[in-house]
Length: 313
Length: 121
Image (cartoon, rainbow over all chains, first blue to last red; front, side, top):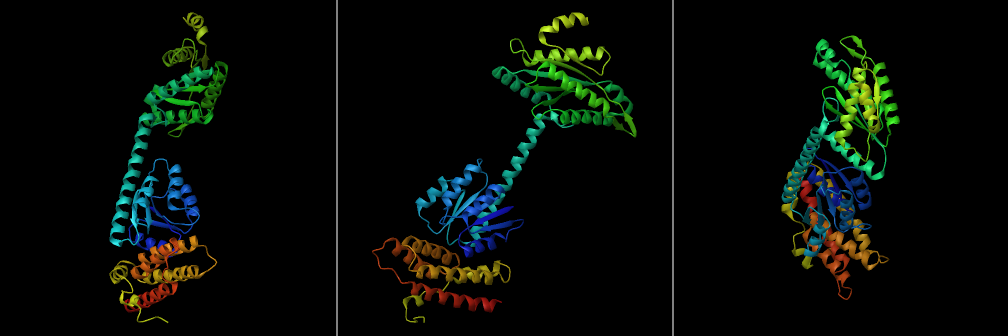
């Protein structure tokens, strides 16, 4: 735990530091200049700050106001330390975001007990934050391939559809499926199948733009949302991806395996489409690609679909 | 020279309970280091209080800092004198205690603390 002590009086800062250092697992950093202290706290996330109220250049209250504007969750506990024990100073400090308030001189036993309690609360806060982040990750991510899971992919796709409609921009959706995946699983086992899926996801991520969204729909099927991309561009991107996957052979149990994918691509039509219909069309095209010999990309617009469907049948 | 007949001498030079707690709780040598730092800061603040070129605001600020620091280190009586200086600076019409009184009180506190620390070493 990092404890920061900001006091323009070097003896006071050293005294607080010497008491804090009696606690386990604590690192201390002292500043006699509040501006230096603020800069450090903004650049590094401290776990507890002891702050003197009366300081030249920047008072403790001013520090609090400025720091809390950066620390928007007000998650770092700040203890205001002051020789002015009047109610007004206390109110001002608490209003500005102080977590606790200590009047000089402070009783070392009380000081250490309060410090311990604040550090315990801080540790709980950090643990909770980590748990929430982990839960969010698990709720939104396919942990094997680290792409968006089905539910999260649809959330993101719907957001992008809204944006495309609002801004009158194109959007393309691709559905990709590994060819003969069942054979790989049956021949080499599920661990090998997992390796293949990870390789596919890694290749897709490495070739797509940061704002493209890759999600695993289930099994060996992935979807790619390409905002601000028309059908022609979408087909081009997917063709490059298909070729890259074919070129990058997967190493399985000492054997170099050629992997291919089939991809269906369709462009969003703002007049008639929703996420479901767009996906259904791309999925249909994917299966046309499979039926036409696999290892290929087929892309068709909504207005050509009836023509394409009748040709296909 | 310290005036041995001053009423300040009737007050304890420092809070012995606080000093004992420091000696018991902190690593050996740390109380000495802390009081060395305190001495440095006392010299700086006394110089600030004596400096006639300082504004009233600067002198008040130095007295305030002195008050808090001395109280933190258990020099309670000296802290009260610093508080009186701060108060008199804020209310310019009042006649405040002179800085020499504070200096004498601090010197008495330093000497007494030194004796305790030397014994504990």
